Length: 188
Figure 1: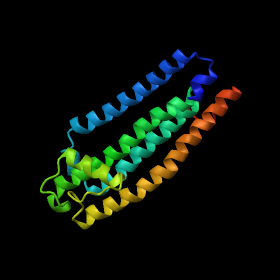
Figure 2: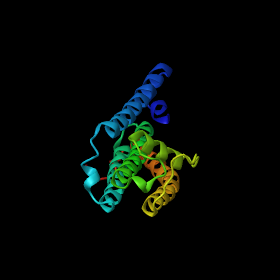
Figure 3: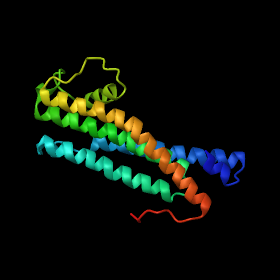
Figure 4: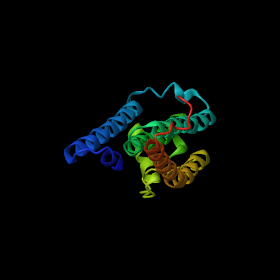
C-alpha cells in the first residue's frame, strides 16, 4: 500500500490504515451478497429477459465509472482501488446470478437442474467465472446458452480490461495526488 507509506505513517498506523480499508471492502461485499438474497426478484422476473440483459451491464457500467472517478479523486487511490474491486467483482457475479435465477423462474427448462435457487444461480455463476464447470448445473435452453456464453466472454474482458482500468485509475490518482493537481473528472 504505497498510499499509506507515502503519507509517512508508522508501521502500526499503516497496518491500521490497511485493515480499515480491507474491512470496508469486506463489508461492501457482504452488503451486496445480502441484497442479492434479500431483494425480492419475483417482480423483476416479469420483465422481458432483454430488459435484464440491458439493465445488468448498464448498472455495472455506471457503478464502474463511479468507482473509477472515486479512485481518481481519492487521497488513497490504492486502497480505494481495492474497495472498488470489492464492489465491482461481486456486483458482476451477482448480476449474472440474478439473471440466471430470473431465467429459471421464467423457464424452468433453461437449466439442467430441476429448479434453480438463488444459491444454485450464484454457484453456477461462480463455476462459469472460475471455468471449473462441474456440470451439475448447466445451460439447457438456447437462451441460457447464449447468456452463459456472454458471461464467459465478459469474464475475459472483466479480468483483462477491468483490472487494467482499475490499476490505471489508481496510478493516475496517485500521480494527481503527488502533483497536487485537481483530478480531471466531473463531480458525481
